[in-house]
Length: 126
Image 1: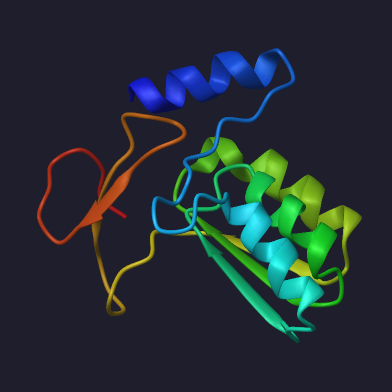
Image 2 (image 1 turned 90 degrees about the vertical axis):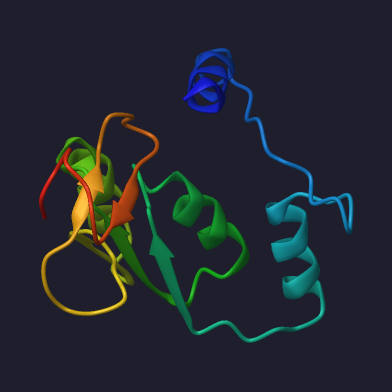
């Protein structure tokens, strides 16, 4: 929850906070840039836990021709997902929790930019 709050504060100031990968010292987006530079052909991107679509929006900069499916369990993110989908014909989304099988799953939605799907839980039934 603290991480989400820090990210939100810095986001309002125009900054993005990203965790460095200890094994490489690079951010996820630097990794995407390296994949693009090496000629990696990405045709499908599935963004699970897409929130408002900000990660997919960044990924589109590197792989604009890929097909995107954003999966997000929290309804308040629908407007952001819808906007990105409307702006890009190759982007689609679904508001649903992701689990290992079809059926019902519990989802802890106490943090808007967080969450946890679980087979056992009390907060939110999807």
